[in-house]
Length: 140
Image (cartoon, rainbow, N blue to C red; front, side, top):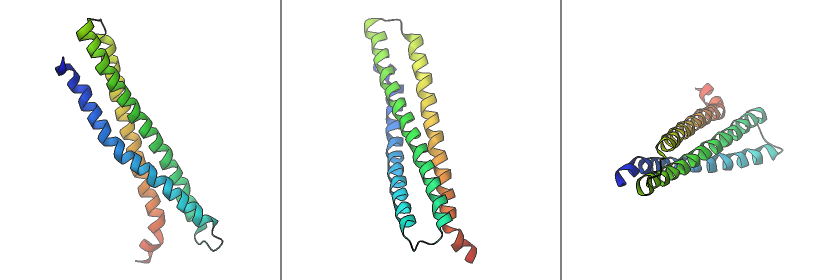
């Protein structure tokens, strides 16, 4: 019985390890949005177009990260559902084998999609960094 629960347990562990950095990045994106908002509210602010562009990108990042975290949470839920179904199959003899396979497939799709959102966030983060550092990079 425990042998069948190994795959979902590994998925739960993997998703748990991915959720930490994703939630940290979301917090940092929100903090950066607030910081950019304060800079834009400052009447003496310089580089207003660059600050606005960074803000737009950072808001997009926050939305991608929200999707990422939602998909990782979905993956966790599906992993737990899979364990529950496996125990029903083994202990109660319920014929849920096909359902277990479908839940596993959905779980993997949710996990892969969450990772894709995470990678999109990384890409946008580097784009925002490029905008911020462009004046310094051109000076050299």
